[in-house]
Amino acid sequence: MAEKRTTYKLQDVGGIGEVKIADEVVTVIAGLAATDVDGVASMEGNITNELVSKLGVKNLSKGVKVTVLEEGVVTVDLTLNIEFGKNILEVSKKVQDKVKSSIENMTGLEVADVNIRIAGVDMENEKGK
Image (cartoon, rainbow, N blue to C red; front, top):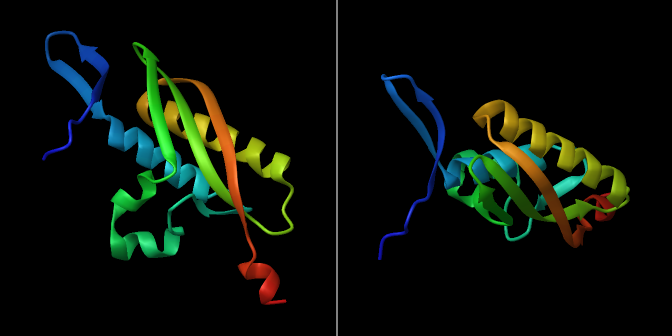
């Protein structure tokens, strides 16, 4: 069964046409922005950025939920795994800022909230010491 794709209208260019964006695009933007922050090991149920090129962009949507509250306003819920030894509050604040600015700059949508749930701590780096 095919998935239903939700799209958001970004702009109506007077008489020329309109620009719409699929919800998956906003989800991928959020996932890429979050995993780009130092201290984020991965998204819950996700892989790190190094493997994305081999396995495809679809994996970046795991651990990310985007909800439209009203026309052009979204909330983002992220589930993250944090690297061992990193300050959870500092990393979370950086993720919130980066996700919000990335979505707003790339799409023009307004981000009302970026909610973060820490699902785990990645011990990989600790074992290598």
